[in-house]
Image (cartoon, rainbow, N blue to C red):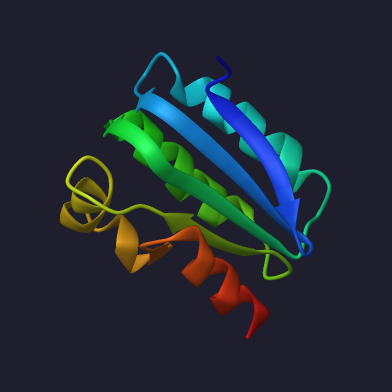
Length: 112
């Protein structure tokens, strides 16, 4: 099973992750995000709904993505639950990266 998949919804690229994002898999997440960013989408959402572990390496990828994107591409993360949203909030990542509890809510926010 592929750990990182990508699809588009109304011009927004969604990179979805499954399983653990740790120091072994974070580079693969970075590659998936970079490939999406290279196409200059209007929006980019990283969906962590199916992630059961989010390590510091994964959070660093999210922060680096936020820093790398210029104002032309909106960026958000979908995470809900103790394995993903909690570490993002505790470490302060959510001060810099928009966090939504569901993909639908994130996409509605981008459409507004």
